[in-house]
Structures are given as C-alpha cells and as structure tokens.
Length: 373
Image (cartoon, rainbow, N blue to C red; front, side, top):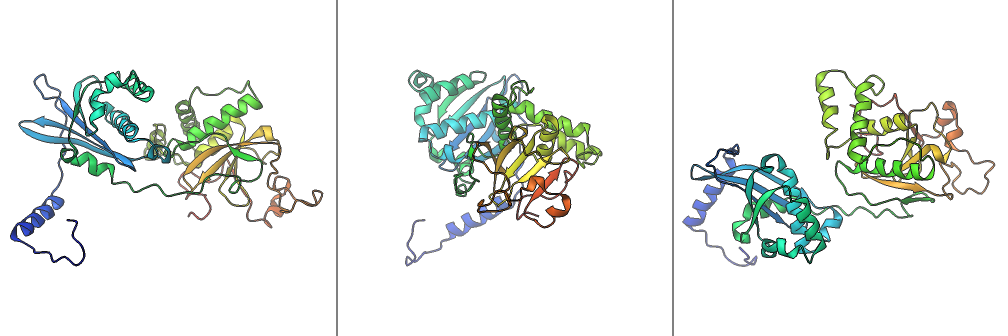
C-alpha cells in the first residue's frame, strides 16, 4: 500500500473480507478450458506482456458468457533480450507467445492484446522499423487483430512476466576463465537448445577449417534428431534402458527446447569421430570420446564451454592452445606430461583429468559436471 513503517494501519472489515476472499481463491482449483472451434464460437484472446526480466501470456476465450482460461505461460528473457528497448521486449514477448500457443492458434482468427499502444500500429511501423518488419514476416502465417489493453486490465500477463527472477550474473567468458588459445566462437542463448546449437556451431567451424567433406546436418534441429536417433539405435552402448518409458524420454529430447544430457556429447563423438572437450572452468577439461584414447590431433577434436553445468557455448582453438599440460609453468616441455599420453595407471595419479568413453556414464547417471552429484 506504499505506507511507511511508522504508519498505523487501520484494519477494516472490508480488508478482512478481501483477505479471506484471496485465501479462498488461492486454495481453489484452477480449471482450464478446452478451446471452442465451433462456427459460432468467440475468437480466442491472447494477452501478452513483457517486463525487464521476462514475458508472460494468457490465452482465454469467452464461452457461455464466461471468460475461460485455456492456458498460461511465462518465460525468462536472455541477458541480450533484457537489454532490448521496451518495444523490442514487447515484440519478443509476442513472438514467443505465438510460438508457444501455435497449436491452439494456427489457422484460426484470434485477438492479440498488448498494453504497449504503439504495437497496435505495427503493420504501419514495419515500413520504418526492421525488427518489426521481421516480426511481421514471422507472424504472417497467423490470422490475428492487435488491440490495446491498458496495463491495469492486463494483470495476468503482467504478473506472469514478472515471475522469473533476474538471470544470475555469470562471469563473462573471457581469457581469464578459458585456457589460453581458446575463444568463444559465437554467443549462444541459454535454454534447452544451447547444447545442440553449440555442437552445430563447432561442427560447421570444424568442417570449414579441417574437413569440408565431413557430412553434416542442415541445422541444429536436424543435429538434435540425429543424436537422439544414434542413442535409440545403440541403447546398450550408451547405457540406456530399453523399456518404453526410457525410449519415450529419449524421443522427447528430439523436440526443440528440451534439455539434452551428456549422452548427446558421446553420441556426437561417435557419429563424427571427434572428441568433445568440455571446459568447466577447472584445470582440465572433461573429454567425451568414442575412441579408445582421446586424440592429440587438433583436427580430431572440438571444444565447448560449460557454464553452471547446464549452459554451453562453442569454442574455437588456435595455435597457442596447449592441451592438458600437467606442468603448469610449461618451463620444461621435455618433462611436461600430457594427459593424452598417459597410461591408465599413470592417470590414477592425476585425478583432475577426466575422460568419458562412449560406453560409459549411462543416460540415467548423475550430472558429471564438477561439483554436481
């Protein structure tokens, strides 16, 4: 209510009634409705809103004189999106909401409500704003009418857009957090697509530098499906169970946005005969390989940066990269012991070095990231 700590609050009967009503509403079950596509049905209404940290959306329809909720959704903006201007964040919220509810809205007319009045005229603004022009091109497959809705009447979408806290401030990927000779190839947004996007990026770069004839999928979505298919064909090799539930979980991982486990790295190594070196900010990388021993040939490996155990960024290696040298000062190259040249007995003396073979670490195993269990 905006009162200071020293202000005396007079609790009234009206406040008490409002409090009890709120408690009852919170305890009641929320019943969602199915969309009504009959000839005389009202158009569905999609309300969207964006805050500084995320976006929210609510899909409703007037049925039998009552506004029924069909679905809610909310998302967190990436660090890049959080730096967008207000109108660009609102556009990002609209694009995300239409992709989220595409299954409900594709092929039917609907109303799109926004509390950002300029977007009501975005058809005209598209001629002057390239981002709006791209958005309109992306949304051309939908049949909708944009209407303004004041913020006070758009409370559901507004609340959903503020559910997500601000993204944690992870340290920037710089030369201080990566070994010398490794740099970020391209920035990848967080989420379930970060791993396949990063693998696709390093694969494309590897083909351009080392092996142009290496067959590759057309996009990261095709690569995702390829990795899932590889594991489904070799369940025993990847330590996966063959029951229906496990297979269904794998098939679900083929959908965009779904998180993929370390099995994707091992499948990538198996398909393309490339070692995947994952750098977690510790002294030595974790190597995912389908070979008996990892290769010391730069043309046989790719690098990824893992942030917080879940987010990945593609890395590129240059000639200054010194892989896994146990002697930190590098002052005596003749006596430096490279992990790639160790026998299994010697490796036991260097517990920081971790090598994962394709036949190890089943899909159901805990995360292999440092500090995770």
